[in-house]
Image (tube, one colour):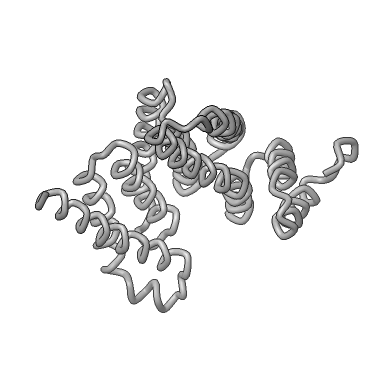
Length: 244
């Protein structure tokens, strides 16, 4: 994206979509930030563009960090001379991950949450804040405890609003339940709490399954399936732990 040319807000939205198709994700995020700054009251489509843009630039780095973490542990066991090289690259990726998380948090706090006027929009951005705190928790850095508490706080706030003001058929509410439960299971190790959140959302969605299928709510049905898969996996893991 040109650093000198300016565009209208509509053009920045179009550019963001174009960069996504071209898989130029850093440029996509720059265009997103431009249209957010010009008017932070986003449509549902624009919220999804924002979410997709940051997800596209962070997903690969999260995978790389996990890979290097595993390599580091293996090389430690072998007392390898390559550990220093692994740690150097891992440290670079960690800094990049932290920067992405900080950038989106600033955008949410400065522009998006103050202009979220309805429950669904507010829950969407609170969930996003929780997600990026969760990604920082995965780094297990020196501020893990503080970041973990921040994630839990915003997830909980979003969860309370969603349960009160948003129908279970809504993909934002179900997506929050999915990610909140993953946070409890994978980050905090509170497995029963994770299962309770996921099971409550899944059970409630089953009551309206016919409506979801009739309306062809693909995004919502996908989240319901993910909740089900997590519950099966987690129950199996917890049973194995009890047997051992």
